Length: 188
Ligand code: IMP
Ligand code: MG
Image (tube, rainbow, N blue to C red; front, side, top):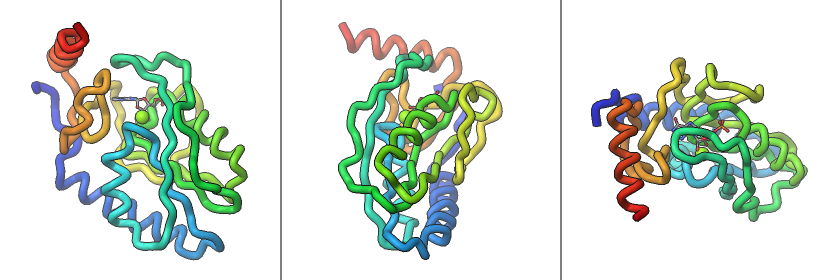
């Protein structure tokens, strides 16, 4: 790996502690218990750490969509797994790894609204604002990304590889080449 570390373990702990506290304080007085929804698979690592810092009673659920291939968004979003929990009248907090063009989050918000929640809120580990194509509001942001780097690790993947890393790094062209080779060799 020659790219730069964007978040190490300690920074991840700081961010999840800060966001978990804010979320708990904001949703503590909801009339009904909120539903925290992780977007699979990218947000799972973040979701698990964030939940440890949410100190109010809540439900958890998962939703899965697909839109990416390699380092490019295919632009076509598919719902792979819908919510399992009845979210009517509750706050739904969508937890994502990264909001990039905003297309996935915009789709998710619209979709979750069809389940008639009281309100929909968004928490994302990374907000890549310069890449935005569709305007979406993120209520809780771990870190803003100002360049166009491709991030790998801690849930974020290159063709499904790299999610298990306990840190996040910005892939250098050499890193992308290395991951591409790994993926191609393994797909033979
Ligand atoms: P969007 O629809 O362009 O906002 O893309 C959002 C989804 O694309 C995220 O949930 C990620 O799964 C994926 N994605 C966007 N940027 C990156 C990145 O830098 N690394 C890995 N995955 C990414
Ligand atoms: Mg994702």
